[in-house]
Image (cartoon, rainbow over all chains, first blue to last red; front, side):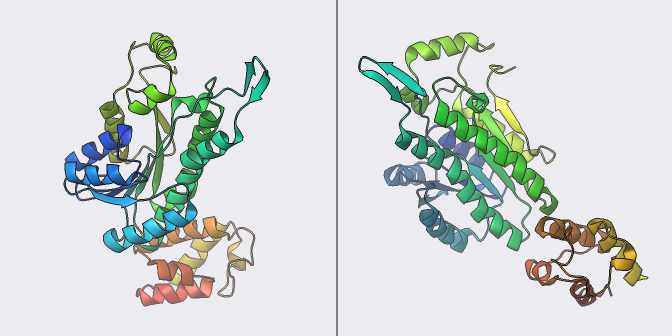
Length: 249
Length: 77
């Protein structure tokens, strides 16, 4: 797909990987609209990247997605590409031994992580694909996964959510390819973003870098570049592309 | 000729003997004609007849007879 003039809807585009992807897509000539929960961030994004649409949305809420998609479709008719990027990094072990006994993984953190990283992908994709089908749009769905989908100690919820994202990618590719809709995923490795710094300790990051054959973290623009390349390649479908410096080989 | 073409096409997609494909054959009557198979049928019709169906036409194609009406509207009857 040539991105010039194509309409791209991206979730979680205010900062980090999402923001880098927005800039890359705009540079390719795409018409980009961002869904994000951060109203202030959306206002700043719209000011800093002219032409980018901004709609406030909690993508983990079915009602809010329905409202925001109504607004989007009124303005843009139908997206050619959906990038499901919104997510949170959460780290917690299944059980933790404390001086007072054993603590288990917090259920609220589990539910929140699954809602934002997995349910949002389901809600957004079903809304966008419904419109693609009714307008016979041959589009692309890009899910941002993670190398943690293969299982990462200390990230039960996050790993489970991202494994779910990979499963949805394969399932939907099988369901939707006949309609000309491709579904793909990008699985970044550890990347230099604020959310990584907040969620992972410096010591863990150092240890992780030592396990990356390239001996460094990924850069947000490298992940964004992969998103663009995957959208542009019309034969890439149903697969998850790990962009991780060789961490998982 | 076109009648045979449609019957062959439906029979091939739904994995049915051509003799079982009549105008009254409808979605839900045979197990193989589910929503996913319906999309396969749509693509086969579009490819076979060189046309693009609208969403309304796709939804309207509930039986072989309905498909025939849609094809007629495209001048493919």
